[in-house]
Image (spheres, rainbow, N blue to C red):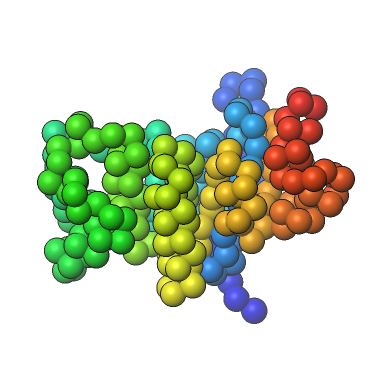
Length: 242
């Protein structure tokens, strides 16, 4: 029996009198893509921030690779990365310079080869020498994805990873993520408001509402449970019950 890459047990986060996350428990197996779904304000970002060690849980435990995050933070986070359309990179550096900085921060060997490889995979050659502040939103999204994949993490947290990409590039990104999962056993926690994308990418889905898990299972099982035509209809049904 394999050890889960990530195990979350009875996680809770309070901000004063407000409870953002309440008694959330789940796990991710090696090579699994777990979808984290829910309306704005459901607790998705708070959960991810706790998993990254950016905020401290009020209660509960987080384990990665069989180790407690609280006790082994540096060792764990060396094997983790994160991408979101809502984060920024140093704007005065070029795309390539930003990737070199990330490589050095993580102590990567053969940075030149790794940067060349990820630039090619994400089709960034035409803007690799462009100053970051001049990037389009879609190019910035690819840069944050490149930053996340450059370090060859064992688990990747993706928050709306294709939100600003055109359909062709978004399709290629999804194919690349699936190939990384297949070839190196990459585990992924995936959030998106694109329901077709969630159905395509996720092995399992957990649905958060008001900080609690209200549904869990494959997309097909969740759709059947709520008697809806597709995942989007399930999302609308649950979101409108708030």
